[in-house]
Length: 507
Image (tube, helix red, strand yellow):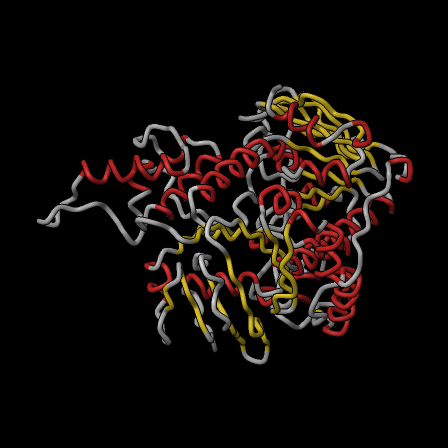
């Protein structure tokens, strides 16, 4: 390695020649990555590109097969370094699962880490020192709340800030903070708050590695963006000198195509489902309709009640009042069997709820309806593979192997299988609850194409999402919820993400 220019400080983090394989699959191939002090580095790439493997090696979940050099804050770690050595050198992690205990106080949650509670020489908890440490940690993220509050009382962005404060509090000085999809479940307004706090942390000297599938966040936050593809670092570019289209081309090998204006969309057909005066523990007197051949997106901050609409229609939640009308038949409540019989399909946000991770792709495809692959009392194995191959090819699942376990696929490819499973049975109504959660830009495009094809074939689509930009780009109409009430339903062509955010936050 060439020496650093005179007067330039050592980087916050440097790795050279990092490689990792799993069986015969090369996950990381001779990766180099250098992050400067106080820099916010975005990391982009499709599912399976190696981003998660890099983070898991950094956090000690995996061991690298080879690494030529790893340096933190200018101090090289010796060969055979342990995972604890990386964290002790000043690298903190905040994962998608924040690992907070909702029933415990903020103060206690900050002690649930390697550093633990502050202790006296006698080994007892030094509450005065601990509370001073907690106050300093919350101040570093500019979070002004009572440390005695239970985490459950906090807003989503505040919970994320508590997790960040805990990660930073493990060190006198954190050289690098690694954030893996920290906004995946945050409402739009909370995302802006979090990004602002992260910039303040970087300005104080801590470098940030920011991993997300949301391109708008990468450009709003990052100084530079690194692109991974097929386990390799293919480019690092200043955010100000690149674009979404260029990054997409690097990840896919082809330019991104944008959604065309709404005049190209089909006219909606007959009403498939209506909610009339629906109330739950969170919803108040909600009425709406979804027609065949349209995508109705419902959005709002987490807890606004938008997700209750889909849950009630599919029988996952019992309403307190009102009725659900499916194909002209009124119901005071639904069950899952009655919803299925009426032609309703439901894709939840957690893939573990929608599929069987340890079963094959083929088994996950046919489980929604065995009738087409049953001959007498037996399941026809050839028919199972035939239907599975149809879904795998139609949805662009990679690898194209219906005999592989669902767990072995990346998150985006798992979601394509589960979405294709429901398309196979041609439902009248498809309910999608955060279908792009944790899904990379390439798989999102393929999912969107599938959703649009379903809409164009006459299917009704009810799409619950907190991603306002996606709602504007894909939906035909958009409904916004605020504190359990449906504030407005507008054609997507008449609103912007900013308009939706204002309605969702009561402005």
